[in-house]
Amino acid sequence: MTPAGPTPAWRVGLLFGSFNPVHTGHLILAEYFATRTDLDEVWLVVSPQSPFKVEAELLPETQRLALLELAVADNSRLRAEAIELSLPRPSYTITTLDALRNRHPSHEFVLLMGADNLAGLPHWWAADRLLRELDLYVYPRPGTVLPALAAYPRARMLPAPLLDISATFIRQSIRAGQSIRYLVPAAVEQEILGQGLYQI
Image (cartoon, rainbow, N blue to C red; front, side, top):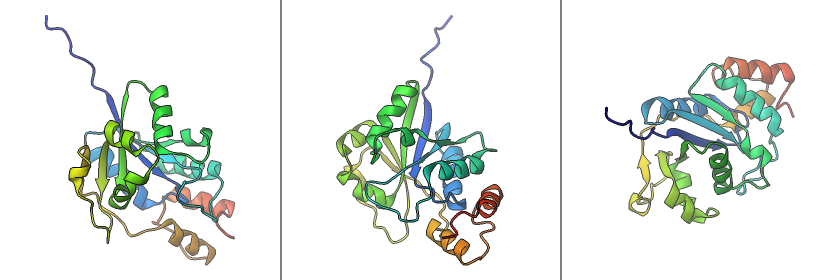
């Protein structure tokens, strides 16, 4: 009898964001990576505060997480991940990665990012470790010139579909009393309007 080989690692893509709020564009992107690559799941990681961005309109993290959980509740391949909410602030990707590896030692994590983020990656905290330890799945960004991938041997460019939807546009629409139907999942729309979120 031939001995069984090693069990393949569970490959999980990490899509970071403030998700303020989560919208259809985020979900299409996550679904693409979860179903059209070698990834088993995609975890949408809620960031409490980006080191590169201070967001005056940032909804409290627990509410953003709750909206994200509503958005992915019916999709077994997508998960709302709250680990950064319990880590020191501001949060850094490498710190999150180390914490996730400690919690899920059998998982192999892949970083999902836009071409614009790839261009700025050398300036991230502990960028040398990220480039050495992680596969990077990169999606296009309109108007962004992709950096030379030769500098990122573990980067893979993928033609993920993008919708020109921004969380800023959604928040502005809410404040103006305009429809956000189809811009966000129906459950998220119901919660936002029912709780009066983003009205100020």
